[in-house]
Length: 326
Image (cartoon, rainbow, N blue to C red; front, side):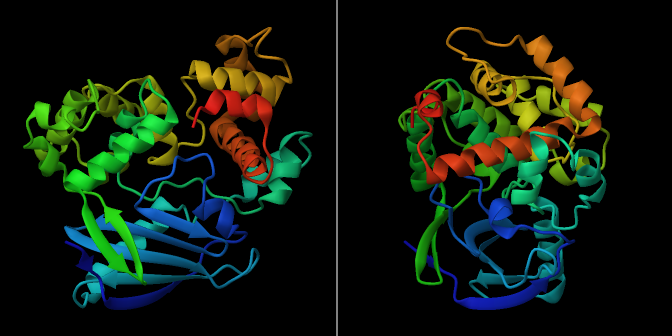
C-alpha cells in the first residue's frame, strides 16, 4: 500500500556563502537507492523524523554567492510549527548548510591539486541526508561485497520493512524505525539474501531501541566518545566509523583508516602511480595528508574525491571502472 503525502509546507533556508547546490545535494560516488532522486537544481528524498514519514524536495532558488534553498515538506497531515522548525534545523545540520568554509579555502587557495577543485566546486559541503541509524544500515550492506549486491540488498530491505510513499507524483521508499528490525528473527533477514549481515542489522537496531546509542546525545560529545560508541556496535569496524565521523559528526580532520580499495584510488589520485605495480603504503598516505592538509585533511580528500566522481559521471575513467564493479 502506498502512503500518500499530500500536505505541503514550504520553507526558505539561507545557507552560508558560498554554496554549491548540486555538488552538495548529489554525491555521484554514493550507490543509488530508491529513497532519493536528483536532477540539477533539485533533490527529492524521504525522511523519517520524529516518527513522521515525510517527503522532502530541496530546490535551489539562489546562487553560489547568494544562496537560497526552497524546502518543500510533504506530509500526510498538517504540521505544527515547532515540528517544522526542528526539521529545518536537522536539514541544516545534515547538509552542513551553515558551514563556514572561508578558512579552509584561504589555506589551500594556492595548492596545485586542491585549488582548481575549490574553484570548480566553490561552496561544496559534505553531507549525509539520513540519520546515524540509516547510515549504519547502509554501511552494513556495503561490507565485503560488490556495489551491485549492496544495491540489491538495500532494495530488498526497503521492500520488506520500508514504507512506500508518494509525493510530487513520484514514488519513493522511506526507512523504518530501528525497532522494526530489532524485533525480527535473523532467519527472516537471511531470506532477503543479506547473508551474515542479518545479525549485524538486528544487533545495531537493538542498540538504538535499548538506548545504547542516541544520535542527538552523541553529537554533543567529544570525538573520542563518539568513536568509542561506534566501535562498540556489533559488526561495525574502523572503516565505517571513519565515514561516520566525517559525514555524520562533521570532523573534518578525522582520518584513521584507509581501506584497500581507497588505497588503490589514492595511489592514482594523489601520487599519480599505477596501483597495479605499486600501491603507496597507508602509513605514507597518513603522513602525506597530515603534512599537506593538517586539520582539514579529511575535508581536502573529500573535495578531490568528489571531483573524481563528478568527472566519472560525465566521462568513463577506465582505471576507476575496474575498481567499482557496479
